[in-house]
Length: 109
Length: 279
Image (tube, rainbow over all chains, first blue to last red; front, side, top):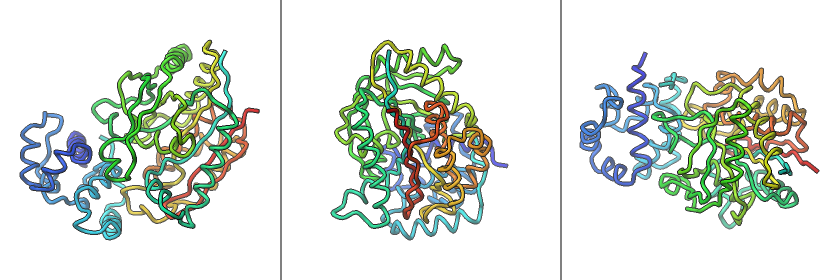
């Protein structure tokens, strides 16, 4: 079972990228670099595990889904950081396939 | 005393905004637009001074660091739309009027009736509030009192609690000395999935949709409360829990059968349209 505190951290990270223009821009420009600076500034409640950090560095929505990221936030995040690099219909389908592999993970923090 | 002049329930699917704003309305979305227009006409006839809007913030301002189960918004000027909603849905920035006096009466009235609402004097409305208003009262000229509910971050309050909140809101409206004509609008979903294996492929659970519309049409509070467990709603789609906002309208209507209840099918999901006329 995933560490519930770190699910909070993933959700917090995604919310920042989704909602803060500067975070969104910085993350798109350099995902690992932005993750490093976010981690450095984050408080103890927002500590990421190594696995979560790697998933965020790769913009890996399938892995994040499996780790228990909130699905609503995760879809907004995936769309914000992959479109237009891939088209929205392609993303909808690929996300569907990757989520299906995990079913419905517990997303309670 | 104030008066309850109508109770309504509808969708807030933000993806409708771009699609319904084009030159022609896509055929599959015509029933959804017709549902909005029906409710718009009904609200105009009811001539409310204020709308109490029951809605769920989508983890924007109410987040895991501070998550209220039920919160009354007490601002007199309410900014609407977050940057991510402009980007993702093309929604406009807007400024809504708030009815701070009625908000205070609902907050105090809830406390007296055992509903300990949280409250905020400084918040923003997301699409769960703005989207229905853009179709129901497009001039955005009727003041609102937002009632935010947590349908996003489990554990959620029970279905019976949403009904009780509605009952308390009804009584608080009727007891308010402000002499307002008040309508209540709930914003929610039928079976809907976003960010899961069944997203954006029509309704994930037509059987749930039909059953749920039936509870409203029949005023079957008991069956609705018994059926609306967390797991049943998740099986119907991972954001279906926002259907719980319609339990608030059932409470406001004292469990009366809706005068109109329908689900409009589309590419996204089945959009709910519920109406309790008061005269």
